[in-house]
Length: 469
Ligand code: URP
Ligand code: ZN
Ligand code: ZN
Image 1 (cartoon, rainbow, N blue to C red):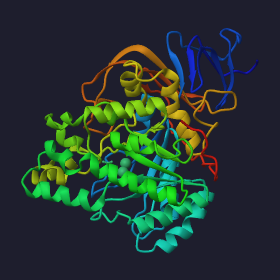
Image 2 (cartoon, rainbow, N blue to C red):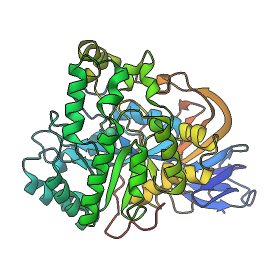
Image 3 (cartoon, rainbow, N blue to C red):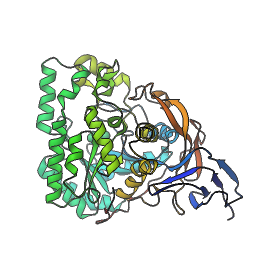
């Protein structure tokens, strides 16, 4: 084989269906061979991966770069966010586009595409969120064009009345039916609106506004009831659906009743797999106010079991880099009611799933690859371009050193000042990240100075969701 740009030699290549000693050859932006060790002798550059895993880069299914939410604007732009992503081994994101006032969702997606195309270090796609809920007819008309334009996934909120985001059951049904008819999938933020919002207000009104009371405002029931309802509506309409940022053991139990792995899926986040609500007792608990809240050990363990047995299919970080300066004044005034929900997380996916999942014997390496990369690529229509180490696929690759000791925290981000993971010691950390055949990050630092991220259209069409576990 000639004209190989990079040969990754001596590592253990992991895909969702195997883990074996192999070498990987890269030409331009593509992988051109995955061979028995030492079969290819020559390349412009040899990368020594001995003692390391060679993994498909993580696909983060849930980021909020440059997205205002609850009156807060993240400090971080696409450039800073995706540089952190690269260092941590995340090589693709699906970012939310929450429709801005006075813009159609199509126009808003075009704006985000322009920003990301100019600044992102990794390839990307979007999930569209309709917020003009008063004109559902025009929303429904827009769906076909958005999907034809390459964005095939959407999200709607079942809660957040004051923010103007909460969609009622009728409109939820209309949206999911239309998206499915056009071959897309709807993600649902599942929390019971009336009970979730009124309970939150009642708890705050009783004076319990400290972060430690946040889980009481949105108990498991609030998520579970909405998940059940969303699933029932989706089953009635034979729609494609997934639940975003799943946090409860009840949701994992509920999906067992449906055709999960075909057109029903659960996404969860690394923080629900790592921490319990005890985190709210910490000094920096106020920064961990997110929706849904961190839960109990039972929930954490059932989410892991679901990831192991196929009921939970993929992982998104729910990355939101709101700074302290935006959270502290609101918290000082009105406790958890005054904190914009969200925390950074795009950087930690592979490291945390490795440490909490593989090192604790909850999953093996192939399943790590499946839930951090392959399943997302399949469900959101970018497979096999992404999500696998195979000839013809983009060379989005992480060389992961399972013995490297590191400490996590916001220092890994350029423009974040809080982290769920502050001070967490890990064993296992990315050594190098290659994005489309270019070494972008090495030993914890960015070495590629120019962004080269591009929009990758989703090719999902009806009946493509089959047999994903
Ligand atoms: O707390 C959260 N999850 N904030 C981000 C918005 C959302 O619901 O994804
Ligand atoms: Zn959400
Ligand atoms: Zn989110």
